[in-house]
Amino acid sequence: MKAVVFQGKERLSVESLPAPRCGPGEALLRVAACGICGGDARSFFQGDKFTGERRIPGHEAAGVIEAVGEGAARWKPGDRVALAADVHCGTCYYCRREMFNLCDSLAILGKHMDGGLADCMLLTKRILDHGIIHPIPEGLPMLHAALSEPLCSVLASHDDLAIAAGETVAVVGSGPMGILHLELLRARGARVIVIARSGNRLARARDDFGAGLTIEASREDPAAAVKAATGGVGADCVIVAAPSAAAVANSLQLVRKRGRIGLFGGLPAAEASVALDINRVHYSELRLVGNFSYHPRYHRQALELLASGAIRADKLITTYAIEETEKALYDIRGGRVLKAVVIPNQGALL
Ligand SMILES: [Zn+2]
Ligand SMILES: [Zn+2]
Image 1 (tube, rainbow, N blue to C red):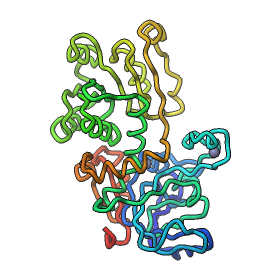
Image 2: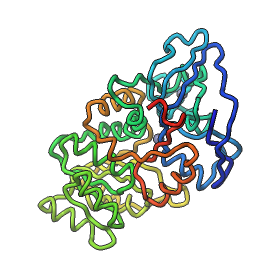
Image 3: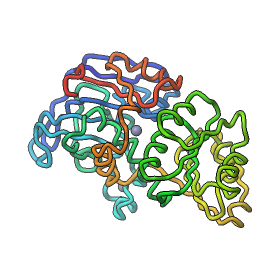
């Protein structure tokens, strides 16, 4: 099989490796499509201790079960399935309370164990028992099913923020996740304001994805512009989907009293301590909501939502052959694509 192998900072190879054999309790997935996550790109460009040696990255995989070992009765050859990132332990304090994404021993496909950027992926017993795998609804192309994983984290954050139809939501960031927030908010009937530093991706948010208002932060004051667009009140909700300490601090000025602020992404460790105006939080009763990953149920919901056509996957996806994975990573870093999806098996399974 062909596989992408990360070997440290900005080093990868596409190699021919023996296809894994599935033993008892395991299954073999033939991969049709695998998206590249921001986390995969961070591992590649910054290196990390988990993928530094040799690791097949990727967790946004969709494919067909090819073989099933003895005792892995939940699946059968020919089943179309999509994967999400997390593999939890099933026994810790949080797993026992079904807060699986907060598992104390959380493992991520493609980071702590080999992932889906390959022709084939071995679904070990641990992945089958405690990972996130759902059938792909009939009629949903596998290419689109690869979007289900990033979509789950967006769904989970919107649920936590209790976003209602008709609300005004400011999304800070116009990268892939910012646009996915916009796409789902639009489908939910919210009015969306997108704020970003530079203009070219904002034009896309407005023209291709229907943002009601876009604000270029390098040219105008976002707080004043949001106030002006909301009758002086502020947004009902702000979602920070940009890895910027300033964006987090400034979000307090965008939201109305008793508004909610979703902290969707992490910050680089060196900038993670941010000074916040706590009086603004206190006197205006702001709600700061952190979100990391998602409960497994959102993965099923994401697949159903994609199958319904409410999310326009085609507009988000750019495809790459497996040999073009390195190019895809540089395109992601350069902001030239929204969602890069690698097509193993020469696209034969799409
Ligand atoms: Zn992902
Ligand atoms: Zn656990």
